[in-house]
Image 1 (cartoon, helix red, strand yellow):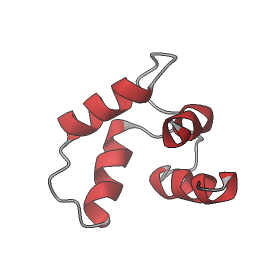
Image 2: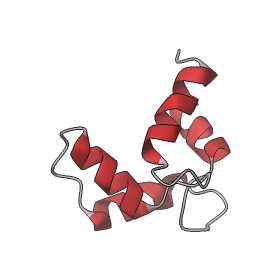
Image 3: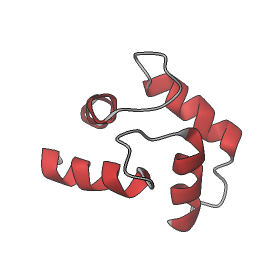
Length: 70
């Protein structure tokens, strides 16, 4: 199982502007930077929607952590 610290580091990589949220645009950008060029903005929106338990349109660290731990 991934440590909370490792998950936080991954969250921080996706949170490009450091505001404590991962937006679909940030998710798509980082996925593409990491070599997954198939991730479009609409795909990122769908992925975030599936993990966004507060229905705010972005992921907080708590939501990201919960999704990673399944």
